[in-house]
Amino acid sequence: MLEKVKSALLTMQRYSWEQAVAALAFLEAGDIDIAVCLCYDAVNRQTPCGRLGNLGAQNGATDPVAILPVLLAAYEKTQDPKLKTALNKAWKWALTDAPRNKNGIVYHMDNSRQFWVDSIYMLPPALLKGGYVSEAIMQADGYINALWDSDKKLFRHIWDDEKQEFEAAEFWGVGNGWAVAGLGRLIEGLPEGEARSRYIKIVTDTCNAALEFTDNNLFHNFLNKPESFIEANFAQMLCYTIAKGVKQGWLDTELLNRVKPIRTAVHKLVDTYGYVTPVCGAPFFNSPGTAPEAQAFYILMEASFNGI
Image 1 (cartoon, rainbow, N blue to C red):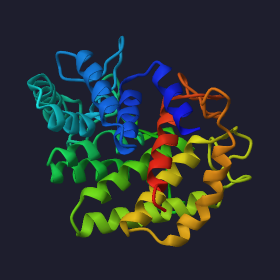
Image 2 (image 1 turned 90 degrees about the vertical axis):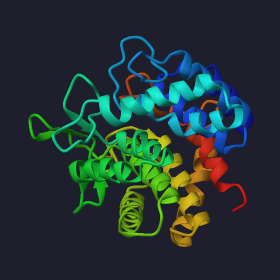
Image 3 (image 1 turned 30 degrees about the vertical axis):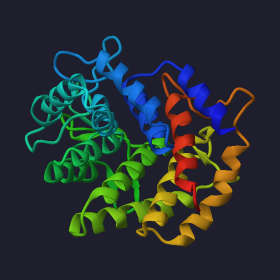
């Protein structure tokens, strides 16, 4: 089943963040050569300003940064100067050229002044992997301050910094998945300290809050809106984050026990060709379907459960 999911992923057209999460999936699954190849194509599609994996007229500011941790691993393996040049151009974009607010927090797009919850996964873990620890924490905190609902213990989707209001206030399942997966990768790499402890608390609270909205071991697209469609990718993202957190010792084992039946439910949704469906479907993510990111998170989920 896992090999079918991998094969299906490799057949799918991918935007920059989809290429990034696919590359990470193969890296964490031990398929380093495939991860390297995915990085080479992202470099082949790097824009002059440094954004990686660009397809068409894409306005993403943080999405094209997400592949940097895997690109670093690819460079370490190959020592190819072409990859080093690409890394330097991408770091310049991420650290100085990407659009940001007066406090230095990078906007999700270059054509609007908005913070999207997706960016928690895309940017801070990449900065941390590059050694920019304080910058990674600053960016993560900026997104948390804009999007974390401390009462509901969940993340909202889009904050418009210009209008000073939510463009999308829903508790989007996949958005919360991006948040916990991204913070989990920060926790994995940060030293002991205030920021790491705070992120552990937020991930723990988010996981517990989300688990209150299970429906037959899956979740609705908007977690607290049962009228929205059932989809499986948030379930995978939750399983991935929790399994990694338990293995690394920063999440309680009880959370792992709660998501084991969720993982089993996801297994039943892989079709004959290896597609995980229904998930929040590409390319518009407003209806059930299939998506490269969902294929990747199935692989990441399975890799995180390896040895448990």
